[in-house]
Image 1 (cartoon, rainbow, N blue to C red):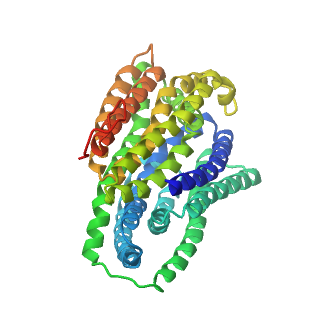
Image 2 (cartoon, rainbow, N blue to C red; image 1 turned 90 degrees about the vertical axis):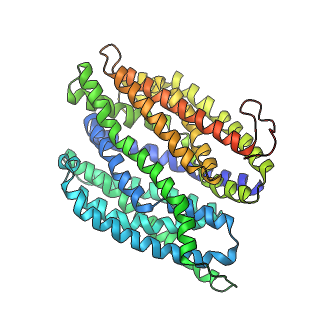
Image 3 (cartoon, rainbow, N blue to C red; image 1 turned 180 degrees about the vertical axis):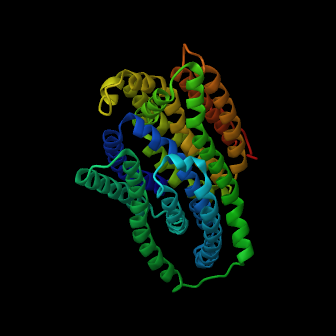
Length: 442
């Protein structure tokens, strides 16, 4: 438990600094791109991240889980097989990307270099995933924390330098913003790659035991495939969401330009502000995956129950005050980006969405550590179907429009959090309400 809190504290401090940098990044983008440009940027981003998820194969999750559950002597053998698997998979994904990306209509509204930028991004993400997974598994949170900060710091420096140096038209500005994402991950790849090589050589200097490639692939893919499936569904839904929102708003009587602008205000301003405290939730996720995996491998249910209670308390302690601040100080916060009353209202209405997502992130780590990735996937499907249905039905009403969209988003977050929580409690043997022991867990 001491290691858990130490790792969490380190990640939270580093992530707080990183989120401050992220806030500045979005501020720079908002000033440079404007409302309409921010809407275009936020529309293409989920599609790019979908390719990134495919490239990573969620190896950071599966490798960290495997490393946490196995003895040190097996690590070198596992990493060798993971590298072979990654190389083969990266070659397949890049080949498909060369064929598919140039003909996807979505990219037609953006700079022609964007699709090639995505292809360049694939091998960087793929091989960086191995290093991330390894350091997460051995709970070397200092390296993970510094890598996360480094990525955002490099992106901010590049954005400020380039935008101050030259003036660009909107499509070129969006391309530059995307280029800084790739460039910052390339720098992180250099840092974590070097650290990984050093550790890998050290593993060769101690007694090791070999694992069969088939066993390693089976163990990694048993976690990676359902987790990737969940992330793909999540990314597809986020890629579809902008078009669903705009379709609903058009149905309600808005013009396409106004709908794009309001979508940009919600995603580029309200969501940026509201998810600022989420760095704590993501820090918990990184630490929880190997911690829960190790505890469940030992069938230490008391440890798991204690972890769940601590995580819930920590989330309440920062989540509720954050949402109170967002609600009562929405106007000055949103006016940092744009002086828009609409953005202020959106931020105030989205407080349930933010609060329940603060709980969702660590609960997802619990589900992964407990081997319940399929359950998490099913939960995501149901909540997304319900959320999208409500969003379109209410967003199409002329009297509600964006307010109806936000009601649907809030409902989806609440439903997903409830399903996750009940499933975790049942698995580790605690009462949903009182958190008292229920006996032997499933």
